[in-house]
Length: 171
Image (cartoon, rainbow, N blue to C red; front, side):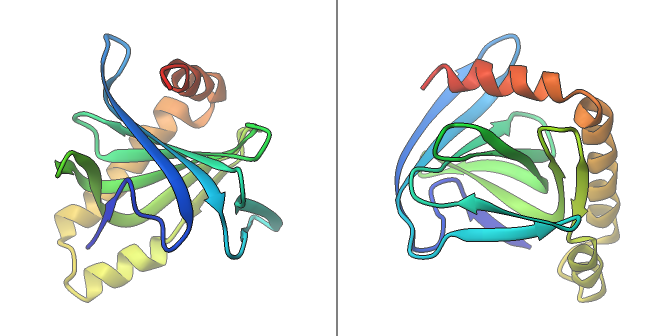
C-alpha cells in the first residue's frame, strides 16, 4: 500500500499551505500546492484526450475529509480553471508531523468539469490484491468507496464546485 503525504510531489518546487476546517459543511484538511518550478510538465491521456495536469503556476488543491475513505485533488491550470477532480480511494487518512497523508488503495476516479468520469488503476488494485499488498476487504472497500463517490458527486459537478469554492476561499 502506498503512503502519500500532502506536501510531497516528486522533485517539483512548490509553495505549500494547509488548514484544518471544522465547519458544518466540511470537516477535515485542505492543502494548497502552488507549483513554482516544474522540470517537465505532466501530461496525461484519459479517454482519448491528452491534457496537462501540472506545469508552472498550476495549483493542486488537496482535500482530506474526516471519516471518509477518499481524498480529492482538484487540479487547476495557471488561470485557476479546474482541470479535474482526482479521487484517491484510501484505506485511511491520517496526520503525521502535522501533515495529512493517505494510505492509497490504488483505485482512482477522475471527474472532469464537463461531468465525464474516468476510472483509473483498477488493474493496480487487482495486482495489489494478488500480491497480498492489500486484503480482500481493502479491495472491496475501494470499490464500495468509489460507488459512494459516484453516487455523491458523479452527476453533481456543481456540488464539487461548491465544495471546492467553499474551501478554496479559505486560502
